[in-house]
Length: 234
Image 1 (spheres, rainbow, N blue to C red):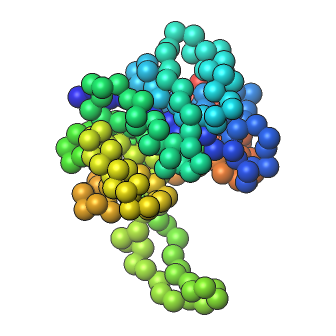
Image 2 (image 1 turned 30 degrees about the vertical axis):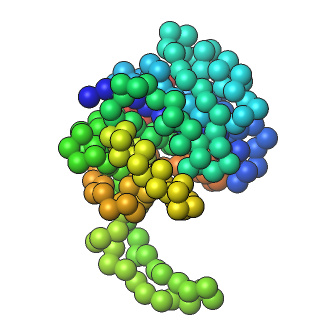
């Protein structure tokens, strides 16, 4: 099946307190988006990758991508107000022949090639897959006043990551339904499950965390200083 990569990268990064788009923040001297794309370069998924960017930074994103990947062609499209809007815009920009789409957060620069490939294989088999890891902490459900309500069985709980990988027709139907019903979800796999379709959980790694806060950024910098995971170039 034809596989295409989609990276939503239109986030402003307000929780990082930065003026530049979060995807372009430097990690070890290299923009985070580039670090993330390097993970997919190892398995040949950069060509015609779709990148969503802030509407007023499209040229900037293009310049940065061409600086680091001079021999790869990208499709840079305008993002939306919410991540779901950006993904929907990106889905509209896919090649007509694309059958499998890999949707991955720009701010997860340490995803493993094994997890990427496993998500592709699972999506081929059942239509939808998300990388995730079993939770190790006890999870508490609280009420609006911060009182304990229940303690779910952690043996059935997973922490969601990306990539989330789909047959294109499945994820497009999920987005169309969500838009029709005015529903906004936190991730794409949940949109698919919401319409009654199965989603396979694929094992990720603890290193595949999302750089969201200054402490996440500090951890990512430390990982790179220590040599980084295998997907990160020296």
